[in-house]
Image (tube, rainbow, N blue to C red; front, side, top):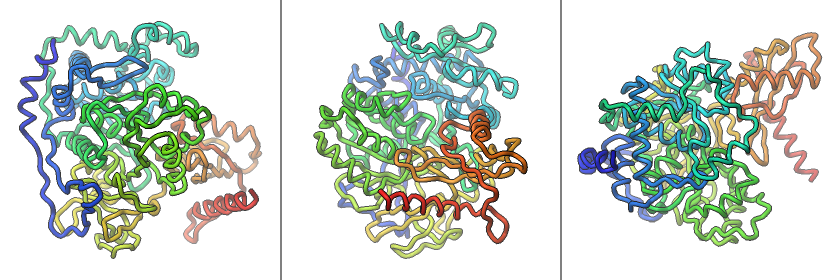
Length: 597
C-alpha cells in the first residue's frame, strides 16, 4: 500500500468542495477589522476530518513531520499509512461505521492514530480521561455503547477491576513503547518498574496484534463521511453540572481548525506545536492536534506535563507555538534553569480553559520578551460545546481584561439570563454564541440539549454558555464569571455535585459540599467541607478514608486537596446548602493572609 494509492482517488473529490456560511442580517456583533484584518467569513472544507488531513498530507513537502514522540519523528505520509492500517484493523475487529470507540489515553501516537482511524472507517471516537475514576469509566463506556476501548498498559489494573460492569468487554491495550523506536524503545521499559506485563488470560488484544490483524483484512474500510456526520464525543458538564457526552461533527472540527489558523495569524505549514494539552480535552484535541495537522504543522506529543521538565522541553524542541491553560504559563515563571532559555522561535502563545489574570499575563509577557520572543500571550474563550475556542485576542491589539473578538462566522450576543433579550453594550449578561463549531447536542439528552441550544427570533441556533460577560462597542468580549456552578482547576472542569455525591456516599459522612478555593498554581483547588455522621470522630483517619474512597471513584484532577470537618453547613431560606457563603469565608481567609504578608 502506498500513500498515493490511498489518497489520490479520494482527495481530488474533496479539494474542490467547500461550505460557505452567509453573514446573517441583524446580528449586532460588529467585526473589529483593523485588528489584523481577519475575514468575517470563510469557506470550510466539505468532508471528514481525515479527508482534510489527507489533503494537507498531499500538499506539504514529503519529509514534513506530522508528529514527534520522544524523538520518533513520523512524516505525514507515514502517519496517513498508520491511520489506514488502524482503520483496517478496526474493521477486522468487527467495528462498523456508526459504532463508538472509546479512547482512554494521554497524548501518544496510538491515541492520535486511532482517533483518525475511527474517522477513516466511519466510527465515532469517544474521548475520556485515563485518570477518571473506575465508576466514571464504566458510565462513560456503557452510556456511549462503545464496542471497543483503547487504553495504556499501565491503566489495565483499573480496567481489570471493572470488566464485569462493562456491557462490552473488548479491550485494546497499547504500551508507551509502541510509539518509540531505536534505543529508547529498548531502554524505556527499565524506567517503569511499576508497570506489570499484560496477563495472558486478560482477554485483551495488544496494539501489535491489533495492527497485525488489520494487515490481513481485505475488505473495504474507507468510509466517505459527510461534514455533518458525528465524528467525536467529548465530555463536559452542561447547564446542570452533570457530565454529558457532547456530540461533535466533522464540520465542527474542520471549521475550528480553519478559524483558529486564520484568527491566530501565526500558523505556518512546517511549524511545531508543543502539544501538552490532552487529547481527551477539546483544547488539546481541537487545537493542539487537529488544527496543527490541518495546517501541515508538527505535533510534539507530550503525554504528561511536568513543571520540572518544562524548561527542558522548550530547550529541546524549540516549538514555534505553545497553547495551554494559565497553569502552564504560571509554571513557565517557576522555571529554575531559565537563564539560557531562548524563546526567539516562538510565533504564537495561546491561553484558554480558564481566565488568565491581567497580573499573570503581564508577568508572562515580560518573561518571554526577556527571553527573545516578540509575541504576547493571547487569551481565548470557548466551551467544549463548540469544541473549544470561539473567541481570541487579536495578535496586535489587546484590551485589558478582554478575551478578544469572535472567530470568523462566529457571532456573540449578551442576553439577560434565561431570555433571548440582548442587553446594551457594557452590561453584564449571559454569553451566547452561534457558528459552525456549535455542537450537534448532548448524547441521549434532548432536555439538556434544548436548554443549551436555543433557536432565537433571528432563526439562528444559539449556544447558551451559562457564563456571564459583557461586550463593548468594538465587539470585544469580557468574561466575568460562570453562571453555572463549576470549579476550574489546572484547566479541567470539576463539577462539585459529582464530587459531593461520591463523598456523601461514604458510610461515615452525613453530608458535604465542595467549593473552589484560590490556589497559586492550579488557579483553583477543590475543597470538601464535610459533616460526619453522628458519633463519628472527625480525625485524620476519617480524612484519609474519605480521600481513599474518592480516589477509587473520581478523576485524579477532581480530587479534594483539602478536607475540612464541620458540625453543620450553612443553609439558604429554602434549606439548600449555601455554598456561596462558604466561598465568601474562604475569600476572606485569603485576603487576611495577603494582608499579613
